Image (cartoon, rainbow, N blue to C red; front, side, top):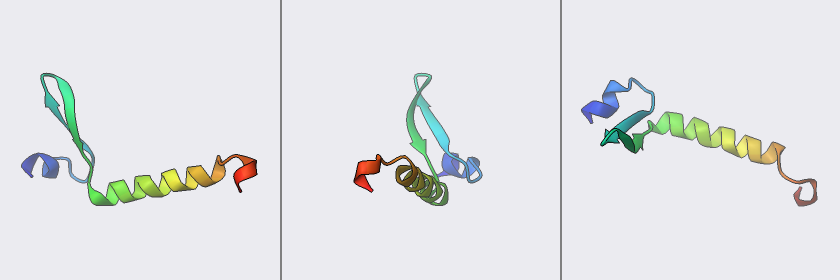
Amino acid sequence: MTTVAAGDGMAVAVPNSNEPAIYCVPAKAYEELMDLVEDMELVFRPANTR
């Protein structure tokens, strides 16, 4: 948890052998990201599926 807290509300990459092994994303940031994805799906949905 110390590593996640060090991100100060931002996503944190935890490396393994200099490669990202896991990304820790705070719940609030993840929720906002999912809201943006949903909005983009509505905007870019093909016309025949509206």
